[in-house]
Length: 301
Length: 336
Image 1 (cartoon, one colour):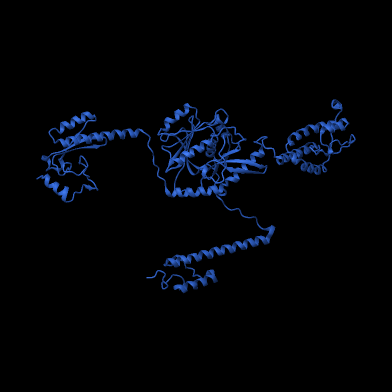
Image 2 (cartoon, each protein chain N blue to C red; image 1 turned 60 degrees about the vertical axis):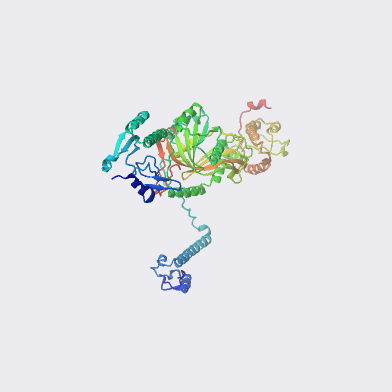
């Protein structure tokens, strides 16, 4: 026989109920058919022979009912009614099914149904929004990567690499005329050019800008003889030299000298040293002059 | 009961107790090969003794090694000029298997590809880069600062708060406002740890892992804040096809005409698949020496995936994905 009070006496208060979860302030009921989730005399599905619940499966809500007539048939104890997807209609269905049932159960069923529909709606909304994906990191892999990174950093030698790259760019001239000092590189370039010109034509090396000590020096030079002279400005050379051939050569030289002057104008401090180096070099060089017919140079004289 | 028993028997050649240790020590110091051939340090059951034996064994080994080195050095000195050349140590860079996707500078196919890919417009000077920097949801202070500093490094960069917007909705808005790049910095546990670099008019999307972020105030001996001048860009070691495309992506972040007056340089150095980013100010002391001073933030990137179109995690076409397998032992660098 179903004695609800006796059952409640046993499981609710005095002895053990396996569905009960006690906390400091309240007790909960873990029974899946419990309508409120709390451990109460009126909410306990074991201690009430007439009971109703709402349960949800895969988005579908069902109304479960238990009556005392079926208490002897546990397999058929719960009557399952599928509720409509329409909220109002379902409420009416609940009212219809639970007509003449205690007010408490009716009320609680409707409350539970409302809650369930609300969370179903929220679930559907969340699926449409952006989801944060949590990607698990393997600790071993992370550790190894960290170590690899450290080693790569050491192998990279970043500062050296950057400095080298910058210096290369400077040499190649990507910075243009901003930096004034690349005399060294410029000299190297000059030397290379000189070598080329020596190889090709066998002419003398280009003259360089010299100190002012030779300014105004007068030399009488023969036509055929050629002397490598330490004369500074080509203009003055033009005044001094009288032979047309030499002037001609001077013109040729002067054009190249002009370039030199403009290039090396910024590097005044470096000049004397280079001049002396040049002088030394020049002593080895054989000078050959090209002999050309006169008419061109008459304008200059 | 005492743990340091003097009575326990060890597995070494017939000795036991504290005296045995000393005997063994003397033995060892006399002749290295005094142990019976089947002796193994791991056979001693007592942990302390085993440990001390092992330590001794190691010391002996290292002593031998030092002696060998000294001998070699002496021989080398004695030989003088006739000594054989010094052997080059093996490094990963030496031993790397030749990667057939390495880019040859004169390769026509690559030159053609470059002329027609998504960056060609940029490299021909038609478009100027405009970068939008944003984060994942609810960024913490560190990430926000990092974004701000990045914005000072990259000219024409704008930082916007994310506020929970979907990337797929941000992208059309960016296109409408003529942005060329979208950078999303992902955050985890209050530290930036991921970067999505998306080239906008449906260009490739690269997803990187960020590590070792150092903000400006954490730098030692740093200079003043970077100015508004366009920095130069240095790209080192991007040799394979994949590396080349990534390198171009980085280059397209900065405007084509650097202002040398500013003397700032941003470096992306690729070493063993890690891309190190540094931002320096340089000064040429003379034509052979240059001094650099680190300014802005520094971080390292590791490429995780490269997608062909704009950011689309579900339907995107992945050009390259990093394979994370713990059995990966050989050094296959994909971008070097």
